[in-house]
Length: 251
Image (cartoon, rainbow, N blue to C red; front, side, top):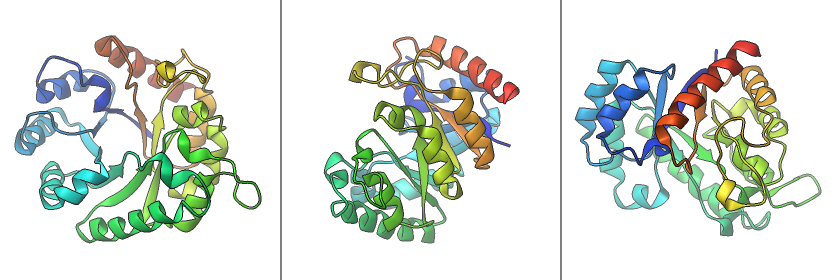
């Protein structure tokens, strides 16, 4: 059964320690959290807060630059949390301009995945909007070419709102790559303007019910909510939890 989680980047502007934010989240219906750094707190303090709240550390977004310069420290920190997934949050547009360009991110991420798997992690790639350059032929988009040039060493954390912002039907891709998707970013969007790249659930054009049904059909483990552009994170926390519970109750 798919479970609800929140990407902590959504709440980055709260003027409180991350450990307090975790306790705040625990008072909602969210069951897991996905990290985007640790603010100024130690992994040990965060691990204690996770134990106190029973929140699951479902993954951490870690940039390639950090993994290149601070690999050992990063791995040790996430091991301290008991977090078993590392998610590469982006690669860059240059890696997704053509079928041939995709070879570089595919090879680089598979090499990284091998190293992280040896250290006990699952590795996933999170899409933005630019991965969906149309190609034609047997590959519809550069995302499809990327998926074809990688394998199940690299999971696909599919962001439905960002895909929709890139003029892609997210349900089609959730179905197409269901065997590689355990984490789904349940986001909403209004295409055409970067200022509405993320909006609160129900304020955009994403067919949320269809995406949740596809998540269930894919046997995904977590629906991860994110709104990186919210101006009222506390209200967004409350409303998103309510909406996700409604979605899970009705599909």
